[in-house]
Length: 343
Ligand SMILES: [Mn+2]
Image (cartoon, rainbow, N blue to C red; front, side, top):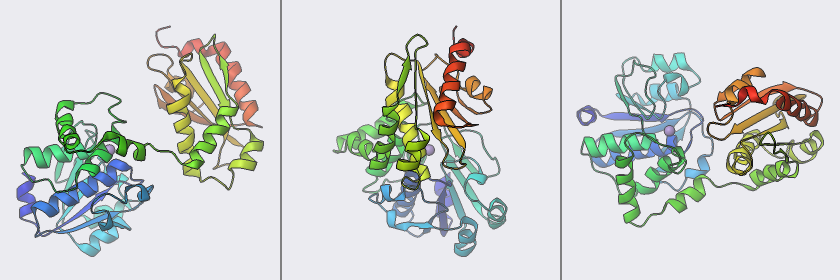
């Protein structure tokens, strides 16, 4: 179906969502490579509106073709017949200028390829399957179903999207056997999960710094089966503020909670308090729980926050991190049974 659409066109613009993650970059490059290989007559452009962590994907094939810029302006400038939207199911996540974007797309064929179902229904073509990653949907749809040729050097690109979004196959998904067939082909030709994984899930010295600050202040309540930590205001001022970028601060906190603290055997959940980098005098609280132990959504809602059942957060006012933490520990000791799943 899409084969005909591409055959009959002259130009395609490829894009992915704001704050692109590894799957967003990988999907864009995979689409570019497949179209270039199979439809050499097509004029191709990749335009992304923002560029978080872009240096981490610079060794993927066709990387040099990624262009950064305002999406609607570039749609108008390149005037392609087709615009492909990858890795997100609604227009609003692709540009800060939603109205201009819609305006620029008026006479265009739009194709949405994503691994999340639902979303906006006014793309000309919507190709959505519940899979680990958008690269996975692309491979299945274009290579397996439509019979297009894959290009040389696609392997790292495919693995980067897949390994990242599946968290190394950490959770279940639909049609995993099909995904694993593609992975098996790639592993047989000499690639390893390890190489991609080390890069995609690697940490920086700033991450390690934040992790060490949290590690110094860990406390436990083994009766209630949880752990807690905080970054004090003094340490924040001397070691973090102005030295570590906001994005890193958040990412490192997330890494510490998910990859280290929550993995402690003796606990069911953990939480941290740390000074906000956005509003001084405010504190951020993040909580994580193991499967079927604590309902983090309910807990966070009590403090006007939100999240998922196994992880969430909220912002709170206070005089210091330590004071906020002490208040939370007091609250947990009294009321945590309310948030226990299965009593
Ligand atoms: Mn994705």
